[in-house]
Amino acid sequence: MPILYTVFNYNMIGRQNISDEIRSAIDELIFDGNLPAASRINEVHLAEKLGVSRTPLREALHALAAEKIVTCVPRRGFFVSPLTEQEFCDIYAIRPIIDPAALALAGLPSEARIAKLESLDKKLINAANANAAVDLDDAWHLALLADCPNRVLMDMVRKMIHRTRRYELAYLRDQCNVDNAVSEHAAVIDALRNGSMTTACAALRRNLTSGNKPILEWLRNNNTSEASEAS
Image (cartoon, rainbow, N blue to C red; front, side, top):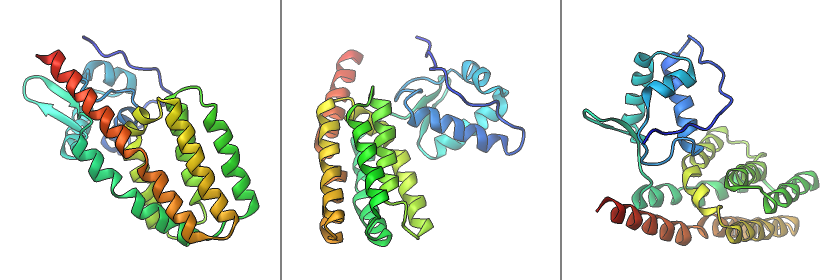
């Protein structure tokens, strides 16, 4: 069955560093959910969408295969790597460490920063769909840590936010989980407003780990369903 690509706003890929640019474009498509997990990548359609030839496209796909983001199956082509419990556990173990560290370095936020966080939460609670919810949740976390002076640490946070996106899409499809996220954000904000960084960091860790159980359950149910369909 051919994959139908969602329309997106990528400009035609430039000629400089073409392989890296194609790689970044495919990476965004995968982590935004436009190329679903375990789906086959139609190289002809994708090359047309990105406005490139298949040779640099294949170079980019092989580079992504080396990072385990896609899988190359001999005589069948490239597939988006599936969502797995192992990857989820590996990735989600990192953010509860680095995000609170970045928050501690950022220090207590100004009232203007707190107002921005509360505004983002109001938008999050009314998000139209999972993609919008993930965008707003990511924006909230980046706004929370915006004053962190350690750029290397913040680069790590952004990379982990990017890596967790496919799993967050599954989690934030459920409005109940969106409500929980907003409630947990409020606990972080309240602690910061009260001047307790220790309490805020603890609340942030809870927020970054509360989704573990439901996402693992979703992964297990999804994998079970796929196995049943395959048999």
